[in-house]
Structure formats: C-alpha cells, structure tokens
Image 1: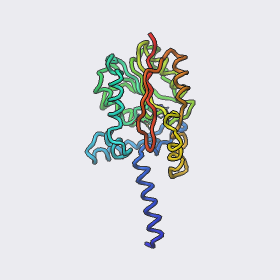
Image 2: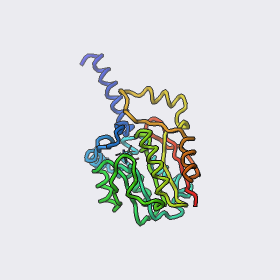
Image 3: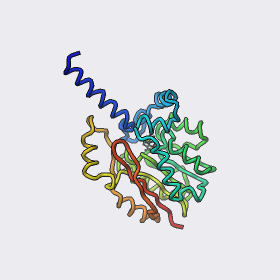
Image 4: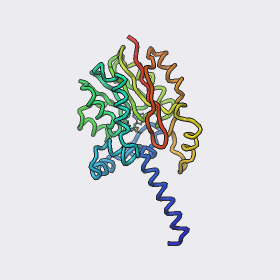
Length: 256
Ligand SMILES: C[S@@+](CC[C@H](N)C(=O)[O-])C[C@H]1O[C@@H](n2cnc3c(N)ncnc32)[C@H](O)[C@@H]1O
C-alpha cells in the first residue's frame, strides 16, 4: 500500500473507531418509525455484549459509548435526589432500547407494573422476556393505552436527543398526562447548558454527513415552562455524558 493510501486508511479507521465509540451516533430516527437498525442492531449488540463478558448495558456504556459507568452514575444521582425513595409502584419508560436504565431502575425499586413504549420490536420483545415488563403499542408519540394519572415514575433516557422536536413535544404532553399527582417525570435533553461554543464546535466537527434528527436540542426553559403549565415543577437537574457531549437530566414533580 502506498504511504498516502495507508494514511487515508488510518484516518478512515480512526473515524470508524470514533463513530463506534460514540455508539448512538448510528441513530436515525427522524421518521420515528424506529426500526431496530435505526438505533442498535439487536442480534449484533447482544453477541458483542456476550463476547465482552459484560451485561448489554455495561457493554454499551463501556465499549460502544466510551463512557463506562454512565448509566449507573445517572441512576445514582436520581437515587440521591430521592426519586426512588417514594417506592414507585408503577413505572413507564419511553424508548428503553437495550434496557440499560430499565434494569438499574428495577434494582432501585420493585414496581408492580413497568410499562414500556419502544418502537424497536426485537428490543421490546427481549425486555418483556427478560424483565417481565409490559410493552405497549408504540406509534409516533402517544401513550394512549396508559390512563391519566396512573404512573408514579415516567422516564426516558437518551431518547429526546434522537427524535424530532414535535415527537418530543407530544411525548412531553403525554408524560404529564399519565403521571399521578405526586409522581416524578425524569428525562434528559440536550439543552443550552450542554451547548457552549466548544460543544457546538465539537458536534459540528464530527465526521460524516449528519445524522438526521440526532443530536436534537430542546431549550431548557421551554421544558420548564411547558411542564409548569401542566402542573409539574422542576425539582432538580444535572448533566450526563452523551457521545462527545452531554445531555441535561431534568427531574419534575407533578403537583398533588
Ligand atoms: C438512543 S436510543 C436510547 C435507548 C435507551 N434509553 C438507552 O439509553 O440505552 C433511543 C431509543 O428510542 C427508541 N425510539 C425511537 N423513536 C421512538 C418513539 N417514537 N417512541 C418510543 N421509542 C422510540 C429507539 O428505538 C431506541 O430504543
């Protein structure tokens, strides 16, 4: 191989490695139909996790995203904030994917019902088998099968940075609707807190032609004002790593 070709190959493989390390860079969910390959191919990810000897969640954190312990640190932070202290009996999660947050949430509390809304059918089926959760029909951004005021903890992680603004906005309204008075709503979004000039440069400098709706940003104040208008007050917020940047986790409490 000529020196120039070798150099080009090295750059290509470095870019591939980088994309591999950021894991969810392969997201392509503008249409929200969420075919499994839009996010993580089920079989290949399970195989790779088995080969690495890690749980699938830890494999995603450590090997695919290059952020070991990221899921656990978010769950630890939520525990410190008292999110599990009220022993939520019903939990609803939007877009659990591989179940890395779901598995750790189940260790924190023992809900009698855990509903999921997940467009990737193989992952949803796996979570039903492995954890006995209830998979609800998932279309667009509706939680219609879940009654008003019926859930103690509603959560979504690394979902609203992958879908369009309208999908997120509609899910926000639904999340407030299904939460029980006194219940909690937890989700992360890429807010302006995550987007200082250095972060914007870093995102813009990433290789490739772009990834449709990923990474999608939502203004923090829009979230706060919208949930406030729906009777939910912001209790806490903190940053969590996402690929080459971060998202902001927001914790809301619905008024009694
Ligand atoms: C980046 S992944 C995050 C998965 C998981 N929460 C995690 O952090 O590992 C986004 C997830 O949202 C799912 N998804 C995409 N559009 C959706 C929609 N409209 N409703 C529910 N889930 C959706 C994808 O299939 C995928 O599982």
